[in-house]
Length: 193
Image (cartoon, rainbow, N blue to C red; front, side, top):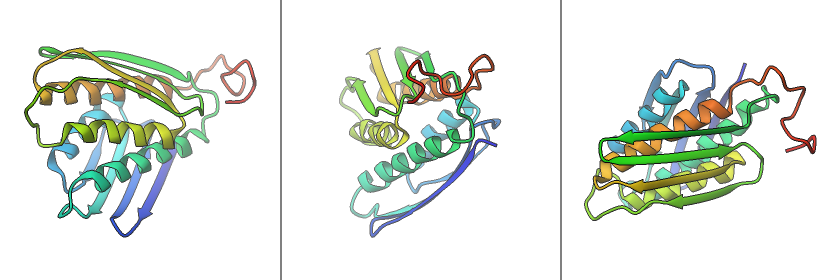
């Protein structure tokens, strides 16, 4: 069954994360950052992943360590869960509007980590420093071994932009992690990802 549990304990964070690829979008999330909890809930709901996260971090310093380390754990969880499912579709993409904002996310589960992040946030907050969104997805892509492209061609409201990104990422990863019944083994002409 494509499930994984990742724990990470450093001097800055203590994280316990469980991911079920074939879920129903059920979540139990407590990161200490309510807006991040909201975004991760949207991600799991739109990707139909069951996701449990309990994170303690040095939020008295700032949110950077907590956000990045959760991204590290989520990327590792995808990589580990996919070991139980070698024949996947591999590629996924989603185009998601959220009012005036539009997000495009494309992913390749290729074991060649890369992040292209083309998002211009306008001044104004949303409960999470917009720079942390890029740091989160960079950590996911590096630790998940995925090529991840995130673009927002237009949007004004920071909350809407972030929400569109997390929803689109959930849908794109759901598509990429689906079993490919026609494939015989690794989805690559090289025979190895």
